[in-house]
Image (cartoon, rainbow, N blue to C red; front, side):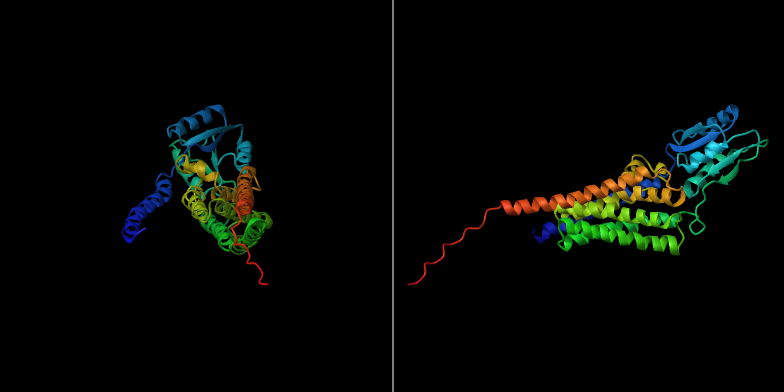
Length: 330
């Protein structure tokens, strides 16, 4: 490619990259709003009907779950079935929230539900059933952890490829590096900053599995596609996984299908799994853990497969022709 074509390629590709980056990061942020956000309602049928009628005015915003009483609604919040619940009665009732699940959603529910008080009925009493830790009341630190974990995974996958590691050696390097990264992340976020709580080893395991899922994916693509796989894997994790993760708000606060896509990618699954393990005693963790495990297993499998295909291609290639050895001189 001559110099003129290279200049044209740069002029054409940079705007495309800018457009993709702005679309991936700015579009979800600009369209942040509840989309079928799970919300519970409990209380007498008449009072519940009034609450549902008010919420129905925000079409498509909430997915209503009915519960018999406050205890059932609290249990649903602790099981991560709903983000909050309105307990209706004749005196104003209660609004149950869980800022640990999402401080943004907890604040949104207060604005959407608690503001419906009337002259003869007081605004609902707000009760935070599962509060966020005091060290991170707005969830900013947990949301900020998505990017470093994704970068660590991308770096692990790229380094193992560029160093020329193959097959089982790559698998061992990725698993070892991810395990150590999980321990370091838990030491910082749990022991030092206090932004996550719960069982220390479980939190370290979530961090490590998140890094492994990204790193194995990048290394697996590189094993099958060459160094171009590093760029492809990094692009998917950075341009889709990071902004679509919903870690700073909630998956249901993103425009669809961004929220759903994000939960199928390691950054989003890792953030949701971290919330479940850290704040909700592992409730609703199985699906997110399985997503990370599948990414890790498929990536490591691709590493082994790529090495086997490379070895087979090398063994099947014809040996170079050799000139006959000269006859010995008598």
